[in-house]
Image 1 (cartoon, rainbow, N blue to C red):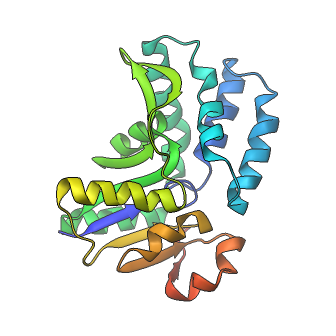
Image 2 (cartoon, rainbow, N blue to C red):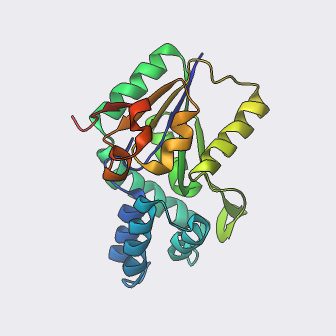
Image 3 (cartoon, helix red, strand yellow):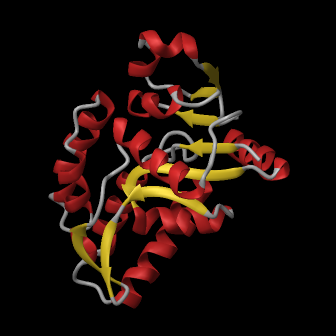
Length: 217
């Protein structure tokens, strides 16, 4: 059994799940429209690799805090099912099928909050994910962060924790990502794929160590 690590936004999904969810929350009236201004600035910093990810995850969860546990689950599940899963790239579906047929252990590794990722993983038939850990009390989100967000080098840290805990090896491992934020994860694995890489990654000197693939078709 090999391990396969997939970044989510821009890699598995042809879009940004934070952008999709927050715009939808504004449309539903559970988030104020002025949140989109900060979101736009956060997205710019993310692609530059300069985002304060801890500040961002605490910002992103705020629209959900006024909702009950059941309301939180319903709006998240329906948003992921109806707006995010349809954006899963054709190449991502092929790659997931490849690893599932091999019996590999598949992980989504993303700085997106776990309350979104759990629905993406479930609907894609993926058992494991490493995401921004957000506190729940009696199943309801509190708005508090409760662990390390897997962003840049911290993707490696969180992966290493899993390797140690489950006694796993990176021998013949696979990693897929689209941005410079994924480079630490990509470089730790045997097979490294730049999936529809953005401009920053295309111009990065480490690109030569990656196989560039197109998953849009």
